[in-house]
Amino acid sequence: MRIPAVLAAAFLLAAPAAAQDWRSAPEYDVLLTTYDIAPDEIRLPADRPVRLRFVNNSNQGLAFSAGGFFRAAKARTRDGERIQGGRIAVPPLSTRTVVLMPKKGRYKVRGGTLFHRLMGMRGRIVVE
Image (cartoon, rainbow, N blue to C red; front, side, top):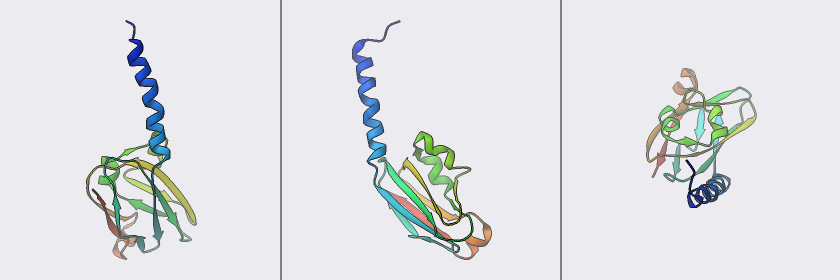
């Protein structure tokens, strides 16, 4: 069975357009410190690519946990492996960036350990 030339051309033209959306995604910084996530409310547009840059200014490894958010969002293929079990681990004094397309909703955010959560490392993501 042969694919009509029109369909093949449409597929080839659509692929670069999708890749362009990932490259032009606006960037949002999320600062992780030992007992805080800043901002504590992250507002993102729904169904449009965004780039989340997680910055760890601590001398210890930290994690950003948002299971519901990461399950609902569509991550760029190569960034999917950075999201493990609904969380992103960020080594000491470093950054991790993921590009994804969030789905509308309100999601809980918290630190990776119970101790960090108890000390106030929590917040929310609002996607509108």
